[in-house]
Each structure stands twice: as C-alpha cells, then as structure tokens.
Image 1 (cartoon, rainbow, N blue to C red):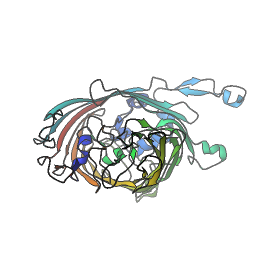
Image 2: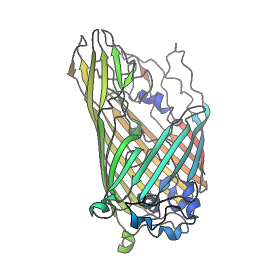
Image 3: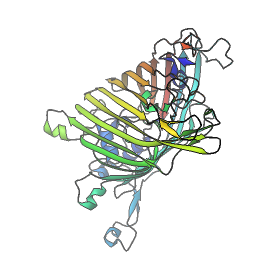
Image 4: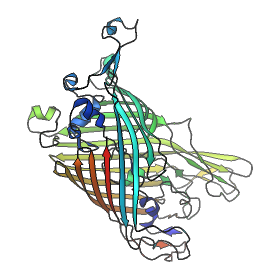
Length: 503
C-alpha cells in the first residue's frame, strides 16, 4: 500500500503521547538552596536565564554559591590538601544531602470518532479506543557538583509509556568545567563532558515541557527496496536518542556565544535482507568502529537597554520568572554512517551509507513571550544491491526536511499558553521505527506530515503541573498500490490532558 501525504505517520503519532520524552527538573536543588523551582524554571522543566546559568556553572549559583547554599557540601579531604597535591589526593566535595529526585506523569487522551477508518474492511488488527488513560514516565534522577569544577548527572527511567514498559538510562555523565584555565584560555571557553548524554540540541528533547515531542526530533530515515524509487536506507538515528562519547563545549547559553563538538558511538541500526529477491529486514546492526560527529554553534544577543542589565544574569523576581529580551541564532550539523547488510546466496554485502543532518534555529524572547523555531534537513546516501546481490550501485538519496515553530506566553506566573506548528516532509514514510512499516507503506513521491498543537499548562504548585493540548491534523485517506482508495477519510486529532509531579 501507499498512503496519502498525511497517513504515513499515523502509527507513530498515535503513540507519541505514551512515548513522550522524559523531562526533568531537580527539586533536590530547591532543598539544597532553600528556594522555589521557579528560581530556575519558567514552567518546569523549561529553564529561565538563571536556570541556564546555574546549569552552565555546573549546577551551582553562578556567583557567591557558598552564600546561598543552605545545606553545605561534605568535604572529601582537607582544603589544605590542595597545596600538597600531587603528593596527596586532591580534595573534593559531595552534596550535603542526597541529590535525588523523582518524576511521574499520567495522561488521559481522546481520539476522533473516525479514528479507525484507516483500516481496510477485512483488517483483523486491534482497533484504537476512543478514550484512554495512560501512565507515562516514572523516573529517578540525581545531579550535583563534586567541587573543583566537576558536575554530574544521572537519570534512569524505570517505566516509560505505559504499565510494565521498561525504561533505561537517559543521561549519565561527568562534566569538567572551565578546563581551558589549564591552557590559559578565557573563562568558560572550554569544558569537557564524558558519558551518555543528550546532544547539545537547540531545544532539549529530553527536557521538553510539551506533552508531545517535536516531530522533527523523532524523524528517522526508512526506505524500502520495492517501488519505483527503491531505497536501501533503514537508518534509525533520531535526535531524541542520547549518545555515548565525549563533548567539548564553551561559552554560555544565556548570552554571547556557545559552541559544542561531540564524538559519539554510532547509534544507528541498519537492516539485513536475504535471498535472491532481497527480502525485507530480518535483523538490526550498527557500525561501532565508526564514531559520529555532532557540532553546534549559537550566538545570543541580549537586547536590554541598560548595559548593566544586558550583561548580568536575570533572576526570578517576586512575581515569577524574569528573562532578558533577546534574539538568538544557531546552527547544527551531524555526520554519521548507517550499516545495511544484504544476505546473498553465497556472501553478505555490507553497505556503509554516510548520512548527515543539518539545520538552523532561532529564539526571540520579550518579557514573558517566547517565539522560537528550528529547521532541519537530513540526507542518507542510498547504496542499492544489484539484481544478483553481488555489488552495490548508487541510487537516489533518501532525504527529509522539516521543523517546528512554537510560541509560549506566560499569561500568569503559573499559567503558560502554547501554540505549535510541526511539519516534516520525507521521500520515505514517517515510520520512525514502527515494526513492519517500512516495506508496506512506501510512497516514492514523498509524504508530508503537519500538526497544529495549541495547549495550556498550569502550575498547581511549583512542582505539580497540569497540562492540556489538542493535536490537529489534516484529513487523511489510505490508497492501495494502484492508487485506489482503500479506506474512508479519517482524522487523527487528539485531545490530551496530563498531570505530573516532581519530588
């Protein structure tokens, strides 16, 4: 079958809520500093300028941290040992209380009345219920500072997207701040992060404040070997997944320049096809010998009229968050390789297909109004097996493009209104890893997915949030391989309400 422009992403979109990305605030910091979550967050986990500065400094107040810290850290060694190093162990600290937080959320969702019209009349697949309660994420996380400019973060998801749905490690890293001082470089111009971490994205997918994720971050690139324009591309890489490796970074996210360069393990999957007719995928592989590269650069212009205010870090006031008026521009680039294996009659062919993702972003903030967006282009080289499965030749590359535009308005310190537009266009279907989809729903002409999402969020307390969003999508219809309608028209609109808390 092939689908209309809107139908190809249906299977993924109806699961988007249940698989919503983890998002973490750290209430343990509130306990350590005796302050509200709103000190660092606009609407958790969205950071304000002070929160960005707190994170950049290694989970410390950017100035006079010792003055504001209500629970002193525990010293691991006497301060005088600094003078005796390297003949003794260099002293450090650990947080004075366990910096542990918890997060849980649950959702209620309502689908459109004609939600099951995409199914052929003779289908035996389960139907989609009209209404549905879903537990979302249960996570435990910790973060803090070990002294000496070393910070840490670990979060582990015990349950993701439903009952008995196993999670896994999210981020787990050590970050060494301002190591450029050892080379007499400007302050904060060079940091080092090691472990598993989210890439330095313009807007965090792992700590998104929306109920549903931005579609472009979940976009993988899948093709099929059948059809008028075959694609031997089955690349599961998506920006919403963490990477394992090292990252160099510098500058500040709350003003001026910021950059990062990361070298990480390849975290893509390819397919194995077998037999004389190059059958569908039967296995998943990656190329651990190759390391992917990601780079980002941004510059932020703080636009406050007063020069002192323009260069200072804005902190939350008595009535709520306070950010600079600013205009920020950025760009990013990712380069990697995906592995495709073809099982022939006498040998296995291996295609290592280079791919890249590139894009730009902006963010404009005026008092309590924030308008931001992102555009991304993705391209995978397409190496096709010949008829006998003995060699490869170059086919038409698989590519996609798209992004999002979002406006957030803080109507009250505890009420934020949201309006979002997501768009993704691809030469392959928007399968995003859905099992069995890449060979059944191929559309050689490409497909487009649009979504408009108004929403509103309420802070019941600083650590308890109620959210609502309505996902609006165009009318869709399924067609068979001959171009004949195979379903009645349908929509996949959803109304979603969520409740979450952090501790």
